Length: 246
Image 1 (cartoon, rainbow, N blue to C red):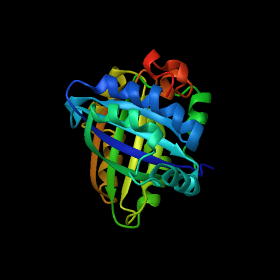
Image 2: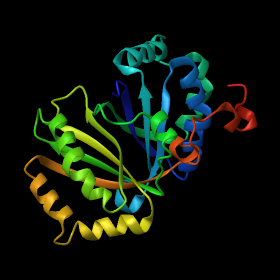
Image 3: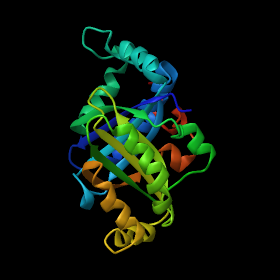
């Protein structure tokens, strides 16, 4: 039973700073978030620009339920400047790398594995497929069960593993996110071809159109310190010397 909640961030990157930003988030931010807020890094990815907006990064953070998220918000926003003054140096650096973005609070399907479970199970993809799915209002939970029961086995036939399944909170239960670990670029291409031919996967997707209003799939590649790549949370030992005292 997964009782966590997640912060999902789609971050627009300024110029040629994607690699710097991903390192700043994992090595320099995540250890602070773990120690002070018990916020775990679920993953940091760069969007494959040919499949979505660019340059863009997707961050997902794992919180101890809504109570844990409330404590985290209180910790960060309980200051006149709406930022933890201890992190002024970190915020100033981050501002040079990013120019905006869109965040959501996500609630996992109860069977979705936590990041600790995924790392313990050795789940890893060479590439990840990130699906943002619009559904009829009030049907997000039913759609996630539909994917689990009938869609995941078809994706699995091509080697794809359903890593995360979430519904967006604070709305009308009309949006879901799916994250798939894909073992190789060849397996990505294989499924895309199957999705456009007369196959069981294609027939399933056509049938699912009755449940959905939109679907967008983009590809993601993990940051070097993203937990499913390394099998652990980022640590202060991953920092450059200038950030060791943060």
